[in-house]
Amino acid sequence: MLNYIWFGMMAIAVAAGIYNGTIDDVTAAAIDMAEVSVNIAIGLIGIMALWLGIMKIAEESGLIRVIARGLRPITLRLFPDVPADHPAIGSIVLNMSANMLGLGNAATPLGLKAMEELQELNEQKDTATNSMVMFLAINTSSVQLILPATVVALMGATASDIFITTILATLLSTIAAIFAVKVLEKMKRFAPATVPTAAASEEADHD
Amino acid sequence: MIEFVVEGLSSIARYIIPSLLVGIPFYALAVKKVPVYEVFVVGAKDGFTIAVRIIPYLVAILVAVGMFRASGALELLLDFLAPLLNLIGFPAENLPLALMRPLSGSGSLGLLTDLINTNGADSLTAKIGATMYGSSETTFYVLAVYFGSVGVVRSRHAIPAGLFADAVGALSAVYLCKLLLF
Image (cartoon, rainbow over all chains, first blue to last red; front, side, top):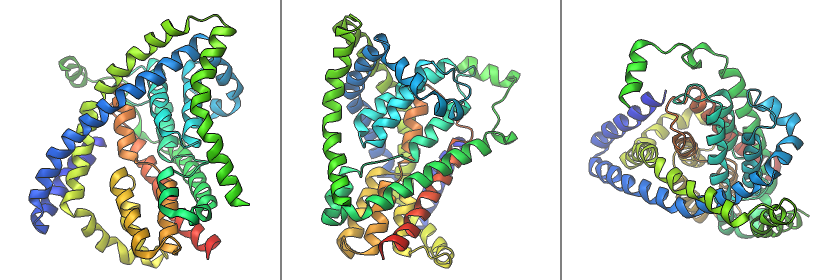
């Protein structure tokens, strides 16, 4: 899937660039974005270190387990293949809480921590599990209780008008995400390859 | 009433990060006798490796998205989609933002700013745009970062599910604003 989308985006960009006469912009964007990507990643180091350090303390003190146990009835349904007291559940819950409160800076490190813990349960390390996809989909549909600061700044006094519409829209998109994941994960074309073929395992050896 | 809730929630939010930064180590130190400084440093060590690990995935996704944006392909797609979406009452002015939102955070913020400046923050167009922006995330970026951090390359149904949710979010923004605000 990602192979086709990734290639497709670049191929369409080059074709549209030729058609629109914007091919120089396409080239410049490719080179710029490569640099921007590294800056984003480097910029994450400090904030990641901070939250991962705090999370480690929360883990060692047993706080994560307490949180995970409390929300067991919900998480058990959304992430059936994760054991209820696994640390991944605690990180997932914290990431979602941070998202709901609009704390983007804290949400990313917590989310990556959750991913790492979900990966421990993954038998095929290069393939997403059902729980990983569910977690990602809930994240990208962005459950929010607070308007992003940028929107408040831009909208000024009318920001409170869109408070309810934003919460409802985000709620509907999250429900849609959960529904879509649950339906799609059962489809054959999205099933993880159960037995690695000779070619695939050879490919893995080369990495 | 709504102003009160909005203000209340944002002022609570201001205290959450400082409370967590102090509260978690306090609980660990006072109740569980965890050596907090030593444990913090062990956990923080992973910050560097994770941030560096996502670089190749970010480069792959952001370069493709950047090229796509710069080429003007989105405008071509708009011309094609606008008449179709008009049929279901989706305003043409909000379409660029809806298509940009899953691809680029800075790009969609730019479009939203433009919508608000040209139409005024009071207009339905601006309110739909702001709702759209606030109710969804940069799907491709989040996918690259989250899956990239653990080396997952086969995303399975993540993109179709994410884009479906984005579409539902965008349509909800349009209809909710039309229903509730005007």
